Image 1: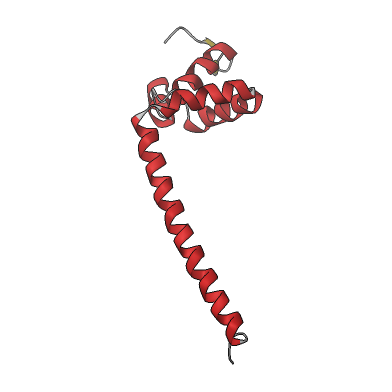
Image 2: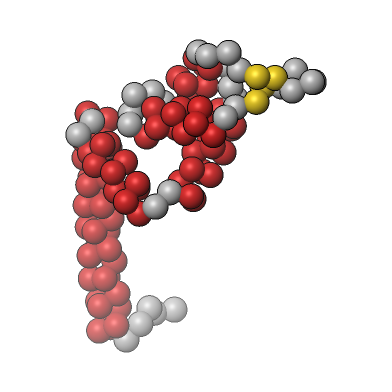
Length: 112
């Protein structure tokens, strides 16, 4: 890690370039926020703030490039499978609930 300038109270001063490079490492899947936090000795919350700030300022083209970069990683494939299973379960539950609702409507509503 390059030498980081410090304020008079000892806090480090990170350049925008350094912040962008570190966040790009997270977005590319090279490291997780936790791993990078430990490696750099920076609080996870600070890295999350950098990430949020960078994503708010990024263009649509930059966001799509990140998505394309993440699309080929093994972690993304597992995550996609997990999301597909969840969506499937929710679709089945929704179908069941709609069938129950139709049945109740045909009966004239719930009996009390």
